[in-house]
Image (cartoon, rainbow, N blue to C red; front, side, top):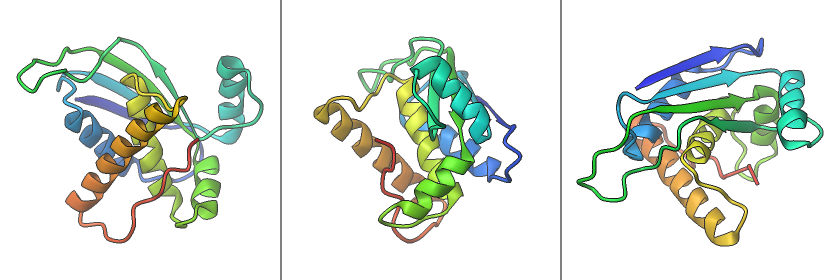
Length: 165
């Protein structure tokens, strides 16, 4: 997989963990190994501008996804996944830090950014959380991916609960 992480936020973040969890999520979702993804980390002002421009909503948000190709996980285990350009995930560490602090199971900004990276990947793959059944499916898959990655990396303690709505 070709995954680029570009930190334009001015905040120090664990770029390697973002890269690793994005790769883990894409592999787990059986996305073609030659697919491409870009992760951009921006400050609150830049995120607010994107949020207004694309969602017509005020204030910065935690994560935004901008899909390129219509890639989906293969329907069958023996099906070959298509290759393509997934798109961009934009993360905001300032919002992630606050969400991690305010979460019922408090966690670090980097843990929140890892969760948001998986959330963004799932959005790029067509998952959504507008309807209760969609939300249950997406958040269940998100938790399974984050838990799997944490276990693989020997991280202990409870995984961050979803803070995105």
